[in-house]
Amino acid sequence: MSDNLLIQSLLITLVAFIAYMHCYWGSTMNNRPIIVAPMVGLVLGDITTGIIVGATLELIFLGAVPIGASNPPDITSGSIIGTAFVILTGQEVGSAVALAVPVATLVLLFDNLQMMFLLTWSTHLADKYAKEGNYKKVEWVARLSGIGNKVVLSVVVGIAFYLGVPVIKDVLAVIPEFITDGMNVAAGLLPAVGFAMLARMILTKELSPFLLAGFLLAAYVQVPVFGVALTGLVIASLTYFSDMKKQKEQVFIDDNEF
Image (cartoon, rainbow, N blue to C red; front, side):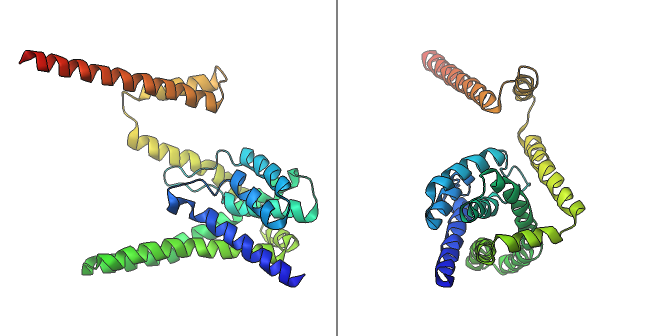
């Protein structure tokens, strides 16, 4: 039993590492619950439950995407631990949500601590090599610190799985309620702050009417986000083809002038 648990823990660590490294392969979205949970189900021998839990958690974390400088709750760890909890205990799928959200928030806090101390130290090290003109060492520091961060997070998830769900619950219970509540509020606010920062960089007078149109569609016409996105796609396509037509007409006029 112990050997089997150890093997499963190593495989879970591998699943976590593959998910965390999604941005290194071109942002493949391998960290999304709908991908991670079935992989956990495959490791634990119940891929059907993994797919069901993955679809459920994907709805919960649908808006959990990094925007600008904000980091959402760590959906990878939440999805893995939540799926494992349901499969190993035979609980209802809904119980995965109750565990996934606090775990994701807790791991986000741990990741932020890494960003504040370990990755900040590596940044200063890279600055040192940059002053020396040693660009190769700057590249190696950037790569190793980035991958090392994902390795640490993967090991944390693997250890959490190995220790078991009861231990995770005990750890979460020790944290004062006002801290977890504050973390949940912050996790909800940070995407809005990140979007505001991003909008400040890209928003122009010409684009402002489109932003207002999207807001009105969602707020007053009750069009879902996907519908607003499709509307934006149509507008962008029409604008693109209109600009292309104007450019061709301008080229035609310029050619005829000679």
